[in-house]
Length: 447
Image (cartoon, rainbow, N blue to C red; front, top):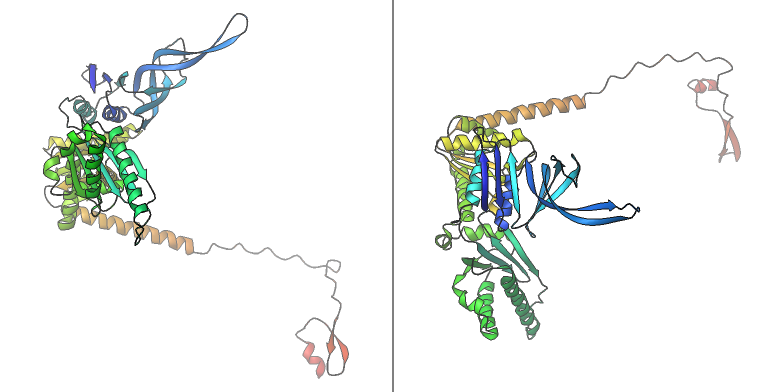
């Protein structure tokens, strides 16, 4: 990220003018811009003009405007940030209060104006503008018929290409079709490498698969490079690292980063640091559960006691539309830093960030055990169960039935007519018998 200018007053309100130079910078801009912020940048709009003769024509006009942000969306594949809002400055092409969408692209100048820049945003700008940030990392996780070519940056894991092919099974005496399909599969992976990966920037390329598939691919890639005289592959052969994985899906990246043999080679990557922190949290949760908690309530209570040693928090929590919601998480981060604690802000586009979001997006490893937090959790559970039982009892209780209204006295005119006697065939005497409706006193007629 290139920082062009900045202005901050004593209350930390002001503006930053920047230019996003790559997809990583666009992700930082997506996390910096929040609802109710102001954004100034250039945009394009179709304008209808009417001549004196009554003829109308449309033209595309480039102009600069400032909008109050209402919503935003980030396209990871195209690296475009779409910001929707209302115009707040007078402009000859767009009315005040009219809605407009600014499409922020790479190498486009933009200015973010906030009423208050918190410490999390300022730290993110410092990180984005640091020229000594770690180089990118590429990976391909594969299994027979499936491969995901990923680009792993300090803040994102992007799937640049997904390759799917149907591979016929091996049969005795009929292995030619299987081998031909696998060769085509490997070649498509190599083409995806050459298209989406810049080997001048990428420091290492991880090739992971179950079994010996990764070794077979690496052998085919070397023969392909010699056959086609491809210098890109031959010169960067040392960057490829072969690692075992359980499958060819994206979530296998977590297992790859936990490999002890791979860790020394990728020790300075942010993704590996996040996975190590999450793994240590799970270990603490199993060994000493009174020193590992997740969820806002428990983390906040531990923060009040100055007990947090490592805070794990997802960056998606800072993108809430509610200012109060964002502020409470910023306060936790600032207090943990004041108490010399470590803060790990996880990217929601990393596999580790996705797992942290399954734990409400916030967790903490404590300096000392706090068993009272477990008791609070138990009492909360008991109160919730008691409340649910009370609600069930209320639901089971029958509603009071209203008293029936007194029946009106029947008059002779309103009395129902007596039904006609029915006939049934008597098989003993071969004749039909007449009978009326059953009456309680009918059996006295026999006496």
